[in-house]
Image 1 (cartoon, rainbow, N blue to C red):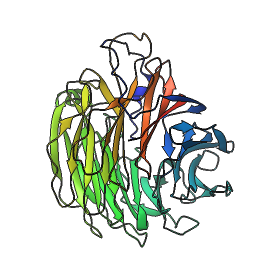
Image 2: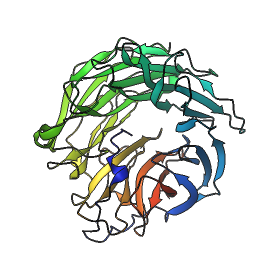
Image 3: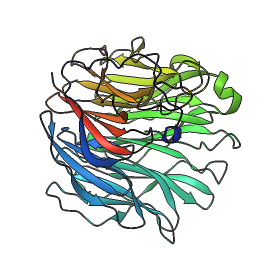
Image 4: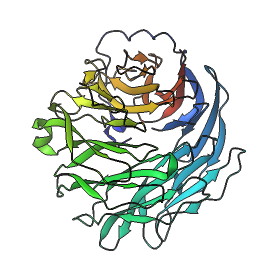
Length: 448
């Protein structure tokens, strides 16, 4: 998830279109779980357990078939710490990332939860002596994990990353990637991805606001030795970059991004979707423009990427269709192994504006693509957010029509989708009636 958080405060939603689409065959009725949640939920790699969190507590909800059990609180952050991310490996061991806001400086910390429920005390992984902020985390099925964050260098803000390689109990010492930005007050936005075998990728940019200079989008990769290579500049000059990235177990990596701009240029510049790829053991190559959209941008319309060993890939984005930030469609591009990306096609209802894309690929080739969407108009008159998921079967290149997985009587937003080892798909989202960013947890299951 990127960090354009305008959706948290939206109060300009209204029901202004046709009745919701009928639920597609194969999806269970939505369950509303007794857990509080913010933007993020996540599933274990086998999609057998749903993890829901707010800013301090983490719940685990087991799944059997299409049924979800009773949620159990399994972690609570200590005072002065906030819960940011949780990731699970294939054995259901958890990596829990928190940010400690306490004198003398902020610290990124990690707690590990074993499959039997044993918790290790939180351990600081960010560099000593200076504040860290805005952390990100990714965990692969074999336990490879990468965390990235901002670190306050005396010359300005920099990016630090730390890796835990397969079989390790702790993270390696943090590494610096790249130099401070031109404005010492501006912090970088950081995204990370991890894959089996110790492979990782990090992307970052210094995007502050219209009154600050525009800077570049940068990326670096790490192979099994856990060391990040020299960073490369992917793009320059945008005010902000909506990014999506993925790394495969053979070391291939993709970064996809949409440059966005401030002030009048943001409403007139035609949106573009770009990508760059890294071969195993290499840095990123030349930039490719995959497609062009209309002017403007979409809140939380960031690209999402799935990448398999050998190069099979899926990229989706919220394609802007008009000036502003509330009009667009989900557009999808697919590539087979040893092939090229085919033409993009729209997958969402053009009368509803999408956001919060989520993408998951299973070992059997099943791919699940989800998003939330809404009608936008003046005034707010009740539930309007819906979450949709399209499930692409193994061996197919085209995604079918998406299903609405949420209950139309309530808002359903911030969805996640996960492909289980049996090829079923589990989806979860935030349920509320006020259009805010928090609420309870909803969930459903797709079984072929």
